[in-house]
Image (tube, rainbow, N blue to C red; front, side, top):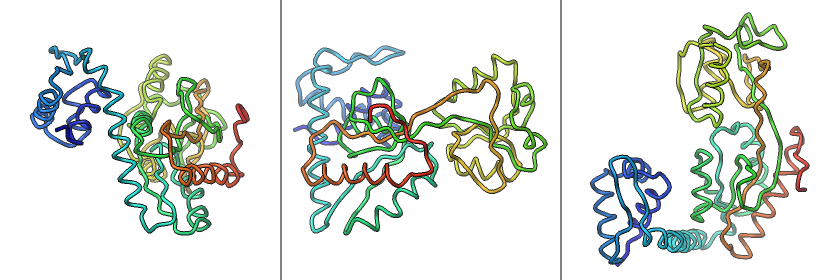
Length: 298
């Protein structure tokens, strides 16, 4: 008999390409994960993975099993969501990219939760890849995340934004309109470890022969911004991050940009859930007047 946890273990390995990384994702030890996969292979009567010292490969049977595993997990997740919503008017499972400002999320949800009677929102916060995985598994209905041309899902563009420097407003460079990369050399720097352009930012400074001084590494963007305001160091952030005591300035040549929007799961949802998602999309677009909306594909 195939168990739910075995499917989760299997798909975690497929997505991470590693037994070690998969074990961390599903919060078990590697021996426990390996034992679960062994039981799954025994139940199926077929080997699912070939392992080398460096990589893990799907066998032909494993490749064929992937869509079945995703479908089974989706049906289980859907059944769980339906049971949870029993006696409730509406349930929305929303994914949030962790590098989107909490102020933007708050502005969207504050009014929406008041306007929709009996609404329960289940939130999942994660990286871009984690969001995509959840959408693919049917664990979330819709996500506020980065839009990519390669993402073959139903997308609703909301706004575009660039990236810039965040400095304490009392920093000597805060008086300038633009900063040259060379002026950042030796500056105490806070690294946002979940930034989606972290590697591009590192290459940018390397190409300009600049080595900022690392003083703090954090996965929490709001904490990074607070430390900027405190004068601990400066950092690079998407433009919509604002806070008292922080000055946002453009860096010359640092021209990265991202597009943020809503992405729907590819799985078929009930008519009631689909209507709620459409309502959430319309509401979100109309309640972000301070943001310049992306007009493409609208």
